[in-house]
Amino acid sequence: MDSRWRRKARRTHYVRRSTWVHELLQRRQVQGYENHPLPKIVEDVDEEMKDPRTIKECQAIIGELQWLASRTRPDLCYSTSLVARMLDRRPAYALILCNHMLRYLAGHQSHGLSYA
Image (cartoon, one colour):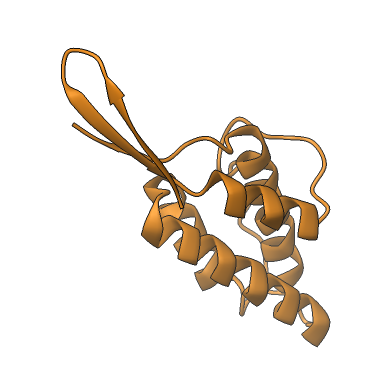
C-alpha cells in the first residue's frame, strides 16, 4: 500500500494502491486509457451464446476491481457493481466494459483516498 503524509496548512494522509494497479495493468496487458470509468451503457437483448471462458475472465477482472474499490478506489464501486449484475445476461458486453474500466485505471493510477 502506498501511503504518505503531506504537510501544507493541515496534515493530510493519502492512501493509494498505485503499485498494485500498475502490476494489474501489466498482467492484463492493458493499452490506452479512458477518462471515465464506464461509457454509456447500451441496452440490448440477452446473449444466447455464453462462452464460459469469457464469463470466467470477466469474473476475475470484476473481482480485482471490486477489491480495489473496497480499499482505496470508491470511484469504481458503481461501475463494478453494474458490470457484475450484467455479467450473467451479457458476458461479452460485460468483458468490453471490464476492459474499459482497466483502461480507466491506466489513466488514473495515482488516484486514491486522502484523509485530512
